[in-house]
Image (cartoon, rainbow, N blue to C red; front, side):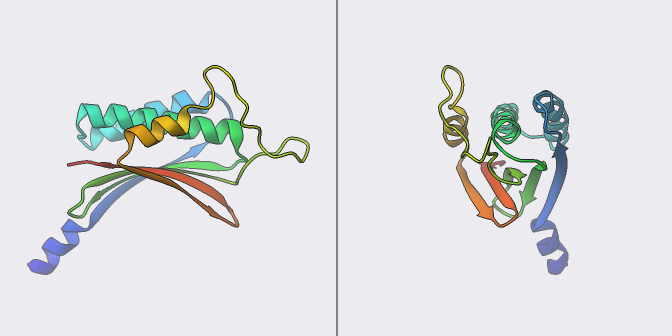
Length: 140
């Protein structure tokens, strides 16, 4: 019986969404993610914060990175009860061999600050196949 309880305690659920490399991907994937978060019965405030982070990370991948990109949502029920949002892509896009410009004006350039402000933890990971940006939220 204890082994069964331990297995349940480490259970996680996950949803993966391929991200088309078009601006419309943000709203389409956000709607799908909203449905998943509702199915997971997350608190409304947590779901709204997670959706904003999802939008920011997807937008960054569509605007600044190379395809393919993927959104991965996971809910770990392991004692920590953590919602993890992660967007992976093939790395920074370069126009004409130049690095990605970070010189947006106006509304641009605030996304990662929003992610940092809303998430309990966040970060990046890079490897030979590309990069990932992730954020975690306590889901208890």
